Length: 156
Image: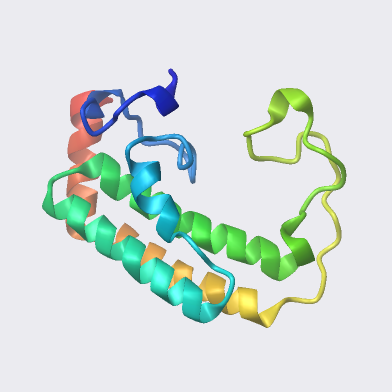
């Protein structure tokens, strides 16, 4: 399925709840609505970003738009995981060597060795903590859980 060409607001039946951050940079129109707000360079930037994305999450829930809410939740999760990567690996490079051509756009080691962790960057670690708190808040939202159950029951 070519997610980049689909408007999943118009076709929510085509959306499947994926694992982790799967599809976060593909699913439109949500990528275009959320990505411009996604930043984590400093705790202040991460706080503003996570609060803006969480507000979008709540707006999607109010509109009954599960796909939008799930995508906002994934961006919060990705804020946490990327901040943690930069906290552990200066420059954000986790694996040794380039991504194999046939694996570009997919996460994972793809046979590459993980580079040793460096001393933790406290600034990026704080950005990660900020995103993790908002991600947890989204995951615990009862309306989100209800819409997620309904989406799975209706569409699989």
